[in-house]
Structures are given as structure tokens and as C-alpha cells.
Length: 305
Image 1 (spheres, rainbow, N blue to C red):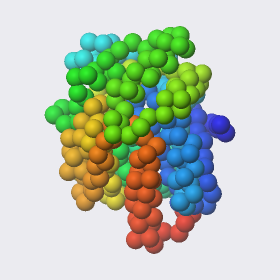
Image 2 (cartoon, rainbow, N blue to C red):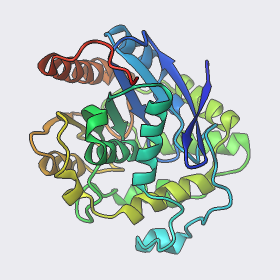
Image 3 (cartoon, rainbow, N blue to C red):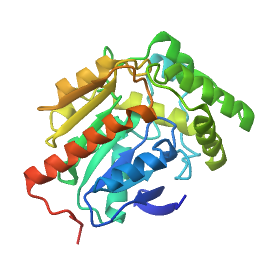
């Protein structure tokens, strides 16, 4: 890995990596709840870069090698279960500012913003609150924060509420069970590669408290449908039809909330990014990004002065 670090403001330092030509149109990839940037597989990033983009992936605050807010409030199980977090350490808007701060550090005036799950929520927030920085929005397996759409199936609740083991072997085994529960039933899973990713996540530093604070940020941010009306960027919504962690109704609600959004659903895809679905995912993201750039007459490299 070629990790780099950027001060993005408000005392937050993000760990990030880049792929491709810095002069190419930038794509910023935002990962989901408690999940490190390595869940954007290196080959996925390299493939996207080969399609004519400068690709950035990063660890969100409170996960991996980015800043941990260890002195901040950690929501308890009752707060999460009741969906009431009166004293959140931060909200999705703060995580969106982290993303914009990273763009500032990389001198990216604007970018194609792509997020999965919680990362999709952050990407939506970037597009709604920072329209001039957002070339396009791609929201994958995400939702609007509304109470009656995009909710987990009952069998997914242990994934959200279960305690993460502190030892490496226990962490890896729980991770394998988690992905078996929420992953894509319609696509073959490479257990060796999945285990390697989970092991690397442990070695880079998991944080159960950080995951809880991120979940608190989602809950405290509430229903974002009104805010999503402000999104001006061309928007693509992608959702797996077999997603048990964020039900497909979340994707439909997101597409409905954003004017002009286009929805793609993928049969057999759950709450992960299976290799066999990469051609469809990468093709859709690249077509969406290049199409918008051409329509806007934007030069290949738009960087801040």
C-alpha cells in the first residue's frame, strides 16, 4: 500500500491512497460503516483508473489509520436500538466536510463522488451541501435515513449490534460470518481474498468504538430526504436486489428523493462489491462520470488554484 496522510481540518487527519493520472477527472471513493478503504479492492481502483480517472480512496474518521476520536461519546446499545443519540460525536455533515477537506488537500476543485452504504450517505451529503465540488454523485447500497425504507432484515441486526472480538482470530472469524450474512448470494465469494482483507483490516486497526460513533452519526443525521432535494449533480443510484443490510427500498427511496436520479438494480448482489459484479459496477460508474464531464464541457483536469 502507498498510504499518505492529509490534514483535512477540524483536527482530522485522513489516511488515503491514489491511483492513476492526477490530471485525469477525479473520483473520490467513500467506504461504509466501520469499514476501511481497503474494502475498495486495489484491483477495482486500478480498473477504474484505467478507464480514465484519478481515483482516491481513504479511511473515514474513526476507522483504519485515520484520526480516532477516542475521547468522544460512544453511543450505547440502547441509544442505537432506540435510534436516539442525543449527544453524537459528529454527524454525516461533518464526515462530508472531511471528504471536501481531502479534496482541498489534493487540490481537487471538484470530483465524481462515489459512496457505498454509509459512504453513500456521506456522498449524498457532499452533493447536497457542496454542489460546486460535486461533478456527479453515485450512491451505492445506501438510503435516505427515512425510517420506513432501506432498513435491515432481522437476520442482519447481529451485524449491527454484535460485539467485535478483540483478538485477531476472533475478529477474522466474525468478519467472515458477517460477510456471509450480508454478502451477495448470487455471486461466488473468494474466501481466501476475503480473509486476507479482514486480516489486513485488523492489522491496520479496527475500532468498535469508532464504528459505534459512525452509527451514531447516521442515526443523529435523521431523515435526509428534504436535504436531498438540493442535489444538483447528475446522480446514479445502484442497489443490490439481495441486500439484507440496507433493503432495496433504500435505493428506490434515494432515487426518488433526488431529482433526475437514475436507478440500477443488480440481481443477486447483496451488501458488498463482489468481483463478478465489477464489470457492471465499473462500467456504470465510468459511463456516468465521463458522460457528465462531456455534457458539461469540462476539461480532463480541473484542479484548484
